[in-house]
Length: 388
Ligand SMILES: [Zn+2]
Ligand SMILES: [Zn+2]
Image 1: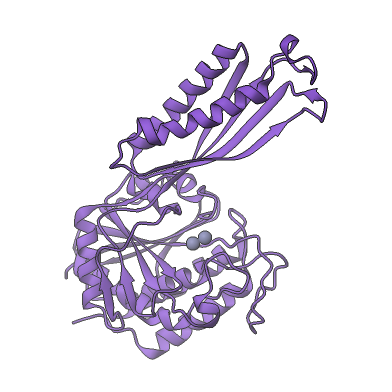
Image 2: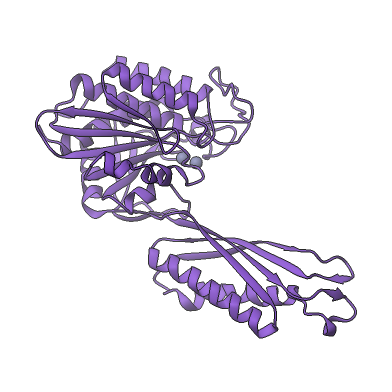
């Protein structure tokens, strides 16, 4: 029997969604939000763990004698955006907004927790994970560092993100790469400044930086296979020079994207080599900071097949795309996939009005019509993976 959430569950989840929308909080500051989530889970009768990785919450629902366990994950944080939707339930927190639909993700997962508590036909354990700070790629790491994977032992993890532009009821995911990793870099070159008219007695770090910026473009064209995906973008050049003074310091900043840890490693290694080699050849000093902001979201084969099959069987899901084009944007869920088999999927948010606005836009709103299909999908995953 396919999971079919009742109207009352969907209506109630819609009220939660609108309430959560009105109290958006930034990453690791989700105090009211996580308290609301924990209260609801407790009301349903779940075992609730709070304060995991800061404001993270885990609800535990056990049923029957099955010893299999799966985790379903939603994100809780909002963005530093001033809302411009004019909605009755618009943000009451100045300068903060649920512009990525995490309010909807929480409502769908809470709705599923309630539905599965009341009517779930499965045997095993479901962990409902509500993670903080997705937007800056810090929350998954914080929860894992706080013992998430040791305290709650699950075999598979699933995640869902709304997608404006896709019709409501449309579902898309694929095995393999779905979203890219994001790394940031900062390269500081220190030379010898001097008079703009006498460069031969200085050691102009701006010319060195120019060589290096061009050399960095050879990482993608000459160090990464043409069959792999990589982006290296220099986005800022800062100097302490002025109109007639050669700078002493030049800082180059930028952003890189890729899909595999091997390519990610290649970019970092080659960048360090080029920076050192270029600085050395011109007699300057250089320091390189390279930071991992987001892991790539690379879906595992079997869980992706399970997710696609569950979506096919879900009432309210009207189309399933098993091979969407991967995105170069990044998602903190990717880090969970480095530790556990799992799948991340997209659910249509519609293309009309506020629902069709891009994510992270001041006019965007999550589509409440997606709540029913979302709850049904989560329930279907549980029923199909934890068979009674
Ligand atoms: Zn976002
Ligand atoms: Zn998001």
